[in-house]
Image 1 (cartoon, one colour):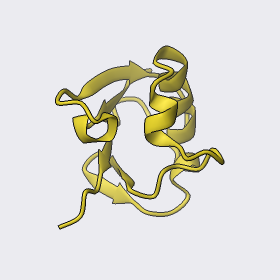
Image 2 (tube, rainbow, N blue to C red):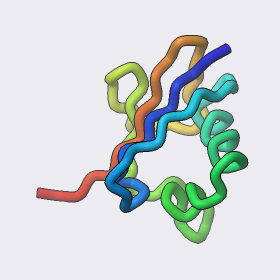
Image 3 (spheres, rainbow, N blue to C red):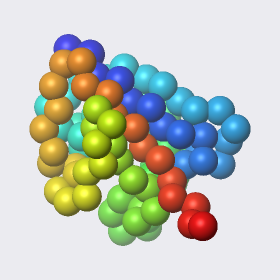
Image 4 (cartoon, one colour):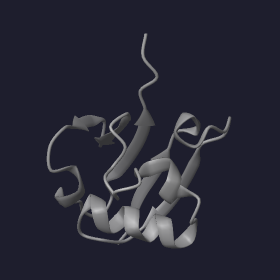
Length: 88
């Protein structure tokens, strides 16, 4: 199974985005895999209580997900994007 996660550079305060292929059946499982591979993502994605940072937005196949994002099911071929909203 191949699910592509794209993390926009703004989330990491880098100029370059991160693209990784992961497995898993939910967005949360995919993020867990990402964090195991690159521990610096924990601080970029989650607050001190372990909640997804409110300014990180997630898109699945181009559609924004606004509720139950970590339990949202994903399948082979999905493309997940994590983007930080910086305001106007």
